[in-house]
Image 1 (tube, rainbow, N blue to C red):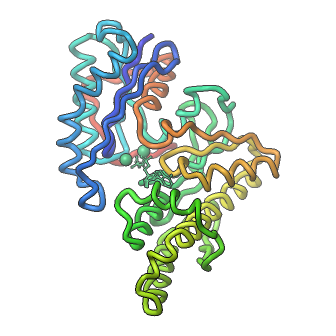
Image 2 (image 1 turned 180 degrees about the vertical axis):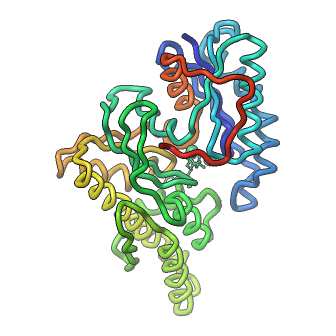
Image 3 (image 1 turned 90 degrees about the horizontal axis):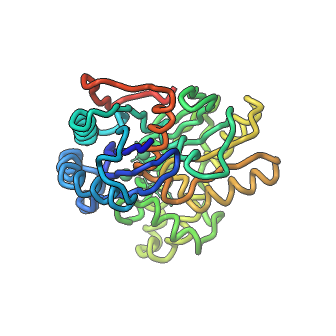
Length: 333
Ligand code: ATP
Ligand code: MG
Ligand code: FE
């Protein structure tokens, strides 16, 4: 089977070809237009998807060394995401399936972030725990099967990616700030400042207090040293990153204890963070857990994860018809 995967939920237009469960291409068109606005502008995102989708799909087909006639099924992101963006990928996938008379498969973007772990070895076995940390979500998911997932914890306010991006804004760094904080943090002292750890019950998260604490810290310090940000950027980034990572991993430890499940994975854009990757690895060694960390290219939005999810749905014969519509909100469970 040859699956064409399409991703267009936010600001990446991506297409991927998966042949018999192996990813052959994964083309990602990033939208640079949003940087000057400090965040994704939905209207501009859908317009850019319209411009990018055909060249992106063409390139994915070309790099896989196939022709469009070889494709046996199309999988697309149905949601969650920006409706205008989702509509572009959904319409394209529906038209392609109709024109070629091949089955259509809908994919849940949050399930796909998790299923990226099935692209390459080593693959986790069911059940496993996945900490999904992205621009819009922070979740702990008990993954019982490919499409049988239970949400056991989530953020009550900002997502972890948002915490990185909003902090970056306070620090005058351009959008998206997550990768930049990661970069500066490498040269900083993670204990340079004191930031609070929120006391949230159960397996839920909160990041909005952290953002406020950073804002007050910066305002206070700038009174004494107007050049505070320039002088202490590395220490600030290291401290913030260390606190976000400790909030995430403390809840993951709690989830391991609570469920008894000893395979743990991370997924989503923030799983590219080097502090999170390193500390999860150490946690795995200390507690004798099986740890799964995705390759960098499968952390942030990509169509390979849509294609692999689509492949497993294809095997189950789980298809949708032309009446399918995208959904801005969709639960992982
Ligand atoms: P969702 O999947 O919830 O719909 P999204 O698709 O926009 O949201 P992703 O593309 O999975 O999110 O991830 C983007 C987020 O990941 C951004 O907030 C970005 O700052 C963050 N991010 C990417 N790389 C890093 C890094 N190295 N360190 C910290 N954060 C990072
Ligand atoms: Mg994105
Ligand atoms: Fe995503």
